[in-house]
Image (tube, rainbow, N blue to C red; front, side):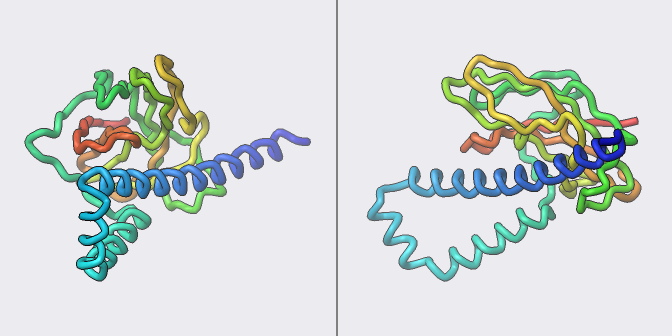
Length: 205
């Protein structure tokens, strides 16, 4: 098999892995919502609440899911949001995150279904200081002028799980379109049920 064939196969595999990972993130987000709902009150109270507000809750939930699927959310900050810089390490619920680098790359994947004038490559290191195995790779989002950017499949994509006490490094790609004036990266562990998050200011070259 030629090198060109190998390259095509790798790109196609990355695109498929990216799609599988996006589905995994949506599934985990749905599970997190369910855990939160069951943890907030007794089973009886939940059933009564669901019965009374079924129609309203269904509409709100559908709107929220549509928003997540289309990745059209905007960056929301409050007084508790901590702003960091490239190279700094943060930790939430036992998950330590270090943003090692953020730069534009010439790498392209012809099988990607995402349009990208530029591709932002983010290099990171994650350490699991918790007592349980965690999924890694869905801990970050990138926002361009406040609007969420779509993920883009690249080499060395961080899609894995991590045992307690272990550390892993990898990358993530994001599609950047238009004249980006401000790019920010948000870190929040996929397994976290809290609203705590850190925002990194990045200036890619």
